Image (cartoon, rainbow, N blue to C red):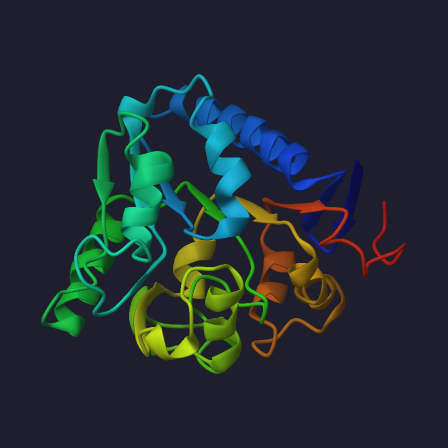
Length: 257
């Protein structure tokens, strides 16, 4: 394991994705317990992606007072039928929301008829329950949630918006076996914006696997701008990035200890 920094971003590197997920879960659980010692409820945003599998499996087994946790998710496809396994709310329900007794889980409604009204509804929830922790990944195109480079805005005035998905983002969903073909993927989705995600006091970002190695390199080495949305994590005062050896393969010694 390595422990390094890129600007304000703490970078932790592990031998494999299971070790990465277990370590990230232990650190996240410790932070959750610290917060619960000071406040009645903790509000957490979760990502739905294969990169989160090991982390969520380990976190769900941690000794946490889940009845004092409110859960949110950071994005959702628009128009998938109820019960579709690709729906992010359903994915998270199977891996964390349905495994532990959350106080409340707030789902984005991918079937809402009025998209703007749904953005407003979820924004109001995020304002009522300000985020304490964001648990996320980074896309192959360096997106955060569905903030692909062409729609990412570090100063977005919105908290939740509708976006179209770029081709790299769609290809990632195929790469991760979420869909058989790009043509099956909805063209639009809801996403929490970058400012909404970064409002969290603490961010845990889990990014394993060889397909993410270029994105990790850009995250840590590129200039901080919307061409590589994940670069903004280097400006957050309390973010930890968790990598395995495969996702860290392009870094070599280019980040400082």
